[in-house]
Image 1 (spheres, rainbow over the protein chains, first blue to last red):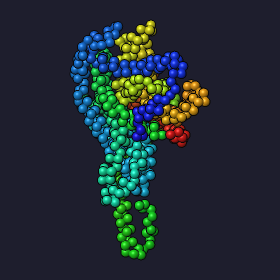
Image 2: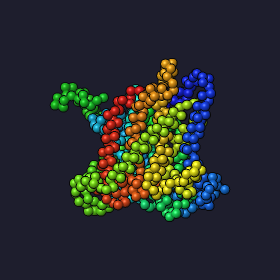
Image 3: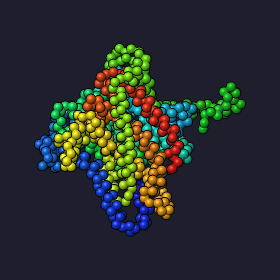
Image 4: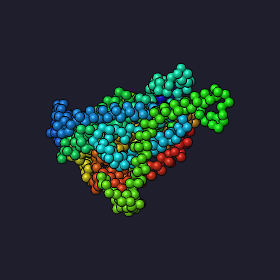
Length: 299
Length: 317
């Protein structure tokens, strides 16, 4: 899990340099051209929709509703963004999303860390049962739980509140599972030495286990960050008030407000929803990818 | 360390310090229990309240004639299940669910493997390809649905321009029956192919170079090596991806919500989407809970298959 895909690619290509070359050269050149064309096609298919979204968000409606279509906007015009802001309180929604994402991901990591520590390092008779409770929760998709959870949150009067959006999703089964796997691989001698020195569980967790688990914490934290930011179904069910609404829910609200689909405005709002995750992805690509593919590669 | 080695409680302590030791052990056990409750308790309590309780409650709701928000509910046994199985919409819903699952799973595995093989070659620019291929996977399904809805716009969309350039006219993607589902499948593939490709890429890099060399020495061509060596070695990865992509495909919601809202005429309503529509739009919460239970059983069977064959996939590490 600690080896990222990137590192493996590099290791692999390093050993590849001694491949026989020059054999059947014309065919190879032909093949390479084909491969490069495929690669370029793949890059275009994957990137053009995103570029198109950014461009459209700066086009005025005459440029969007023109046949034949106009590729580039005449000028980078922020009118669509202003239109978004007058239709929905997008600033408020952005702050709601930022707050709920950070609080949600932070609490998820915290709950996962403490729970996994207890499952691995604290000796109590029913530890196995507790672990089974965590593991089986992984098999229960959140979609099955929406109706009972909705009635509970509604009866608590938590509709349109931050806690109503946040609390039902906090329980961390996947994070706890990943942390537990990692903790089992930690050198037990270090923790025994800490215990000899009189360090209690709390201190051992924060002073010894956490510093030895930074990559796993980063991976779980990033996965949670992305999942919380993009989460839609649950926040949509429990909010119809823009005071606590998150960005993706606001995006569908904007879509339903416009009788006539105004693509420039919708694309501007889509840019606001996607840009933070794109930036996090571009900056922390390695960690994020290793986290998202962790379950698979560890086998 | 373990608490189970304590002597039987009926024995009187023979030495005074034996009693002390036992008291110390009991204190330690209590302290451990306290710490365990403090550290694991919150997470486990949340799991019980927001995962296990609703799971059981969902079974119970499925036996009720009950509308969302109503305080009146009548116990009707398995009537909701009977209604679901005899509902005229059910064949269409299950057909759509099956078509969506098969095409998205098959498509993302084939395209993902192809992309992984391409990215595994030492080509200039493959780093960029890897980045742009994975990027959609981290984006909001609602946002992705929205930006593709614009691309699919039959009149002003990018795609209709491209189709016209090759002499085709754009289908009415939003409003005609097979096209709306095809549209969502295409977007689903675009969003998920990068994930599949990266898992396959990691698998490909786990194939030892020695095997390639040995196959080359034995005179095996590229195709032969791929078919008889690489593909079998990718078996465990493929199996893992098969299960995870089926599970995520059956649970997908956001793209359908953003792009078609289950329409036109219910032609993009999957079982997952039906739960939402029945539970929160028509308000038939009992019926929706029965549909949720059916989805849960399907997902559980698939997961059970995965667990059963789990040993197979650790053979090649």
